[in-house]
Length: 66
Image (tube, rainbow, N blue to C red; front, side):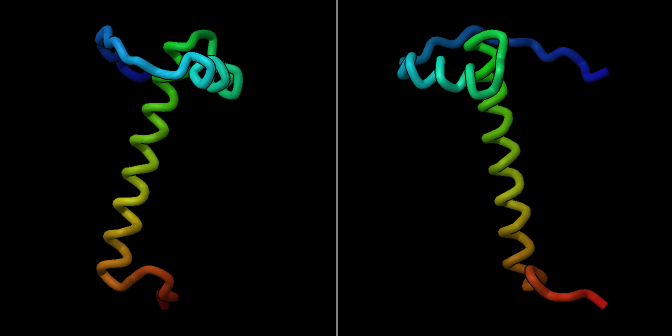
């Protein structure tokens, strides 16, 4: 089981309608959980893009390895 992470209280000005829509789309139990999931997904996506960029720079993207 993953270790529980400490959470910090943050105050942001956001479009409440979009956060509510995000909550429904993610089936999250709360708006806070929806934002946490969205932040984690954005971080994961950035990590994936960086990995693909490294492959592209190495010249190994799209080559068939024998």
